[in-house]
Length: 238
Image (cartoon, rainbow, N blue to C red):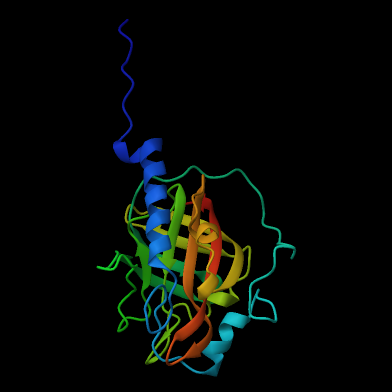
């Protein structure tokens, strides 16, 4: 009997490709920076939507000093189970955070001429942006989604992002009809001047998601002082 030839994996599913893409993503996003307000970056805001919008970043799982839980703070438990298999590449089409009432379409984001991540159009504040140079929903590695906190006309899609609780699901539907379900691990608020690029954008051996928007206090001259970052990992596919 003639032995069957082993079918070669597609190039985009090889380990070498995934490692190279992850390394490139880290380099790119470190250069992107995390500038909210006047000078652009994830969750580029316009004028704040009001006192409640400014205060939101200090609520939820953040501490009284406006920052996220410290390294010694206990993490809420998340139901354990066998990890799902990573999904092949397929672009995102919709983004849901049921606990916050978010159900939004997704737009792809690229890098601009200055190698900074674009943001969703300001005139469409309910869009979620997905960095198309990184993993798609459910793929191995660290995927990045960003959205506005508010615009000149009021609150935007991620106005309440800081309120999401660990253990809550984030569902991202894909063009192939499947849905990647992530579970929130923790929420942090980082000053943009000391943003921990490696912690947020660093490589991961499993499918993970970072969701970013603006946080902290707002100044018309300099914009927001911080970024809200939600850390999540893939727990199911459907």
